[in-house]
Length: 183
Image 1 (cartoon, rainbow, N blue to C red):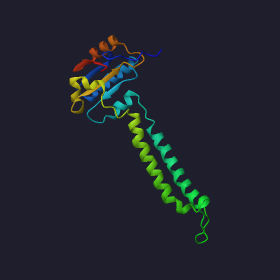
Image 2: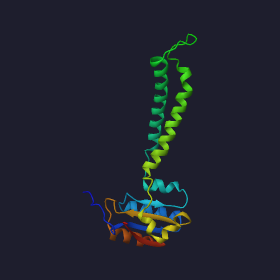
Image 3: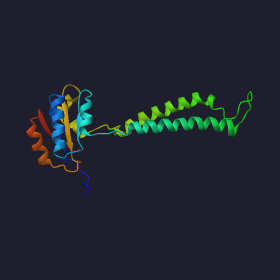
């Protein structure tokens, strides 16, 4: 059953603050054991274990591969069309489809398309640009970029229950526990 779209002032979720990455990882594992799957973690530094513990996978590598292959095909096809179909010129007795001379442009187009796919794919997958997120309204969240670790269980998790999440977080003894509201 699909949840109704939230209104302004409705609960967005619960945000718990932890002093270090180990407590955050323990909280993530506890929430996953309780059945929560759609969690967000905020850390002041990259912590690869958090990404794995949240169970996230990224399709970005496959997108970049597809972009690179597309770039190679576009680069080679553009040169083949220009040299063999649209404006064939016999230069030094070479065949019109002289593929060794196409390698440099094909390589460059592969790199260009893969890089552009990586940049725009990353922006799209991260939901950027997002000028405002409800967690920015929590005063303690200012420490997320300094020295604190945060875990958010949002309303769109399939089994989200305000009371259960609050009890679960209370049992973990976080530094602070805040209910986040939709703007």
